[in-house]
Image (cartoon, rainbow, N blue to C red; front, side):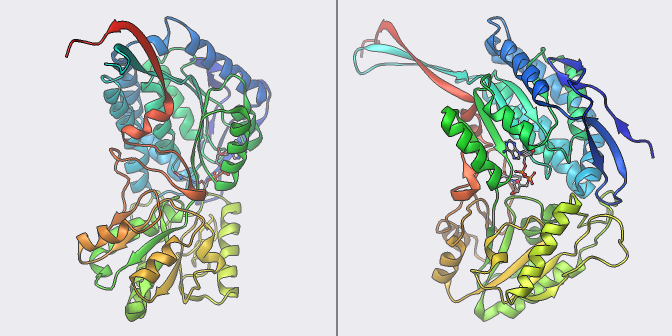
Length: 486
Ligand code: NAD
């Protein structure tokens, strides 16, 4: 197989020679084969990228001061260039991180263009408002771009997560330095090709593939005005500390341990596909998945049987195979982590009712069987800590108050779902759960509505009109103009 090899970085609107010969090697999750390599950006490359973004932002005739319509034309070309690479983008994501291709075609090929267009449309009006003042004169309230944005993303849904940031940031007139995760860098180079083809002005987008130390250098860089981070809670805390010291605005989308609460009237078999999507999608590697299944004691065995039956029925295999429902985990390290949680679940008294090991016949690749634990204590490690793999804990509850108490007894608060024959009852129950987002009989992030977490799941929101404001500052100009006569 030919490997994908890149020898330049996309900085300042062109392919730029990296500062050193350091490389990032990428491995195929399903086969452990070498997929290719790219230059590893170092601190010097980050400095060059931030300088380019700074110059582009500070240019009085540049991107930040263009009309939204003029930026929108470029972003439309960017969207079209990304769409034309959608198939290859989906394939690259899939082979790198194990995401089933059908899912990558949906999340990774489609979302970037959709989000660029959505946010370009949102900024096309309403960015300035003249208000009558209380003191007799008018004020002009403007929404201005915040400046140079450092966008740092994880490997699990790399393209969609990147455009939750790039869509609003670029549409609002900011310039961006993007740091992809080392596990998924090959899709970022397609993005760079699309940006070049679309003619994004130099410095508007710069891409620095690197690990956490170089990421930390970017976060603390004096040329950065805003940090937008998606990743683990541990990294989020470190980044928040730096940003706190620097008084630098930061948005944090972090980990989760969300509850899928099955009410006593639910027929899970009738909604089993939605239940799969809400709990085990992307091999369990999504932050908002409901990985604690709360089941009423009166129907506990039925729920355990249904969920175990689902897990045992899922086709495990190469993510490029259209039949595959569960692909491999992203890396050997991630599989070790997931397996150590399975061992801990057993040691703490959990009963494995499906999976629990590596699938037979798949000796290469970082596969783990979808695994269901029954009889899990709400305080058990596997009921409290994020595993980030296909492992679900089924926890019994006595009544609705007990279910709410267990659901809310978590360090996290990102997603969640309620399962019931009565959607109104589900919505009423959902209001009692302390979380940033929650679905009734399913879970899907609607781009028109804000997404984000509370507690250790993060700060701030992405998506919806609310996802634009973190990339804008409000400026008020007190005008020398009297209010209009009443
Ligand atoms: P990670 O935190 O290890 O890495 C995420 C990104 O941050 C990578 O690009 C990494 O290189 C970089 N990074 C790590 N430490 C850094 C630091 N101190 N300074 C700057 N950059 C740093 O997370 P991961 O293992 O790649 O991703 C999995 C985690 O991401 C899970 O916890 C998951 O829940 C979370 N996640 C959250 C969301 C959300 O929207 N809330 C979405 C996807 C993933």
